[in-house]
Image 1 (tube, rainbow, N blue to C red):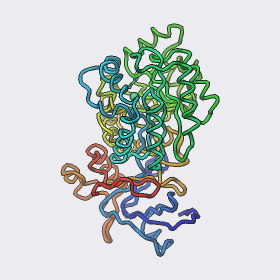
Image 2: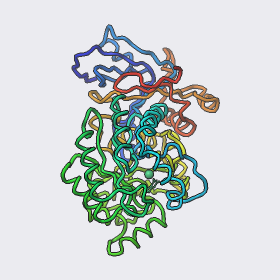
Image 3: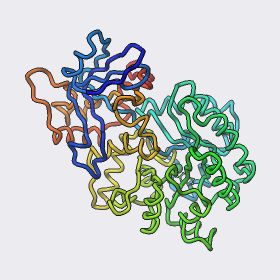
Image 4: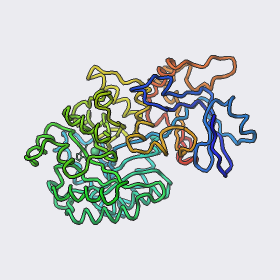
Amino acid sequence: MTTLAVDSVPHGFRGAILDFVGDPFYGAIEDCVRYWPDGLLVVAAGRVVACGAYDDLQGEFPNLDITAYPHRLLMPGFIDTHIHFPQMTMMAAYGEQLLAWLERYTFPIEAQFKDPAFARPMADRFLTELLRHGTTTALVLAAVFPESAEVLFEAAAARNLRLIAGKVMMDRNAPDYLLDTATDSYADSRRLIETWHKRGRLLYAVTPRFAVTSTPEQLSLAGKLLQEFPDVYLHTHLSENVDEVALVKATYPDHDGYLDVYDRAGLVGDRSIFAHGVQLTEAEFARLSEAGAAIAFCPSSNLFLGSGCFPIEKAKSTITPIKVGLGSDVGAGTSFSILQTAQDAYKVAQLRRQKLSAFQGLFLATLGGARALNLEAHIGNFLPGKEADFVVLDPCATPALALRHPNSLAQNHPVGTVAPDLETVADLAFALMLLGDDRAITATYILGELAYDQSA
Ligand code: GUN
Ligand code: ZN
C-alpha cells in the first residue's frame, strides 16, 4: 500500500469501505471496485494518506487516533453534476412540462434571489442540505443576479467545499425582471471568475441558461470568456424536452440542430457539462464524444417533468463514449439525494430495457461525477493524495433496509466470519442505492473534518 508523506498528524476512520478505481461500465468489476469489510481510511492535512484493510494498515500507523464506525460504510462523497441553487424552495411544482414549468413557477421564484439579504441565508441552507444528503461537491447554477453567485461562493468558501458555480446568463425569452444583457453578463461573469475561480477549492462555470434564453451575441461572449479563461467550465442545458428542441430549431433556423448552436459559439469542449441530453441525435452523441464533453444525467428531473429517458447505454458505449455524472437538478428533480437520483437512473434504464448495476450507479455518483467535472485528480475515490471528502452510510438506516440487510455489508467482517464476495456486495449495495436516502447518511466529512453529523 502506497502512502503519502504529510506533515500533520494522521487520523484514521474505521468501517467498511467502498470506492471505485475504474469505470464498471467498461472494465471488469474486480478491476474497478475496491471493498474492505473492515477498512481503514487514513487522513492527514485534509488528504487521503492510505486506504485499505484495517489488519494490513494498522501496523503502519502505530499510534493512530481512530474514529470507529462499526456497521457503517465509508464511501467517497457524492457528486451532484447539475443543481439549481435558486430552485430549492420550489421542488414539486405541479402539473407542467419544461417550458410552462419555467414560466409558471421557476422564473418568478428565481427573482427572489436578487436580494442578498434573502439569498445569503438560503445559500447556507442549500449547502447544509447538500451535506445532509452526502453530497460534497456540486456543479451549481445560481440565478441571473451576480449577487446570487457571490453569496453561494461566500458560503461554500466558509465551509471549505469543492464547489463549481456560475451566474446564469439569460438575455431573452424570459420576464424582464430576470434578464441581463449580453455585455453585462460578460462583465459580471468575468468579475466573478476573477474573484472566485480557483479561490481555495472553488471553481467557476460560465453558465448560459440554455439556447432559448440567450441571444447569439450572449453565447458568443460566453465563448469569449472560455477563451480568455481556458480552465473555467461551461455549464448549460441541452436537448431535454421535445418542445424545447423544436423551439431551439425555430429560434436558430440556420443551425444544424441544438448542439450546433453551442458548438458554433465555441462552447463545446472537454470542460463543458451539458445537463440532460435526453433528445440527442446520434450525430450529437458523436460530437460530444469527440469533444470530450460531459453529460449530467438527471433522471429524477426527467421523470418529474416528463422529459423522457436518457439513453445511458449510448453515452457509455465504446462507439461514442461520453463522460457522465448524476445530477439531482433540484428543483425539477424531486430529491437532493444522489442515492435517490441513482435509484431513478436505474428505473429510467429499466424503462428502456437496460440495466444499471449498483456499482455502475455508485460509480456515477462518485468517480464518474469527478471525471465528468475533470476533478479526478482531486476527488472521487480514496487513492492517496485525494481530498478527503467522504460520507458515512448506514446500510440499515430504515426498517426496509434492515430487512433487506440482515447480514449487512458493513458488519466490519468480525473475526471468524467470511468477507462477502463482490457479488454479495453488489446485491447489498443495490439495496442501499434503491432504498437509501438522507436517512442513510450518518455523517459527511469535508477534508477529513466532520461537516454533518446525523446524531447532532
Ligand atoms: N432548461 C432551462 N432552464 C432550466 C431549468 O431551470 N431547469 C431545467 N430542468 N431545465 C431547464
Ligand atoms: Zn437544470
